[in-house]
Length: 132
Image (cartoon, rainbow, N blue to C red; front, side, top):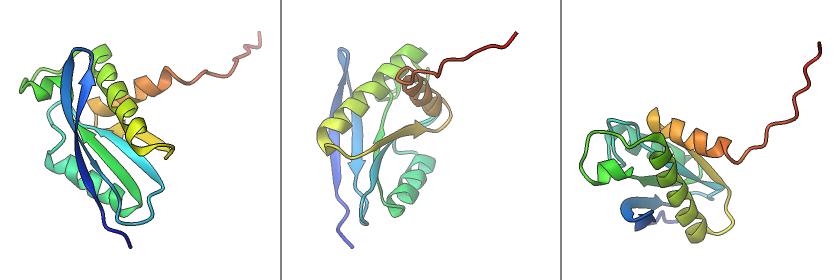
């Protein structure tokens, strides 16, 4: 078993910056999970910490981060394009830091939607044929 490590990052998102934390697994790490919080949470809320702990115990490194509105101590979520921009910036930083490890993106509620919508932008749907 190896020692888990923790790194704190400042991530540029457009003209702003947000906080992120990368924690490695103490097991053989197979991928990194970029985990976005829900609308009422933040990267350090109890639920997200539990998810991160569970994922790390399963062999995943975890990156938790604050959306920009939370970083600014606001309770009102940013519009979806800004949320997606934040997820994309954290994913880009994660890729730069962890190299070629596979990445998984997701999150809780609103954060999961933002991650899913970002991922959908990169997936080309198969050609659909309609039979009439």
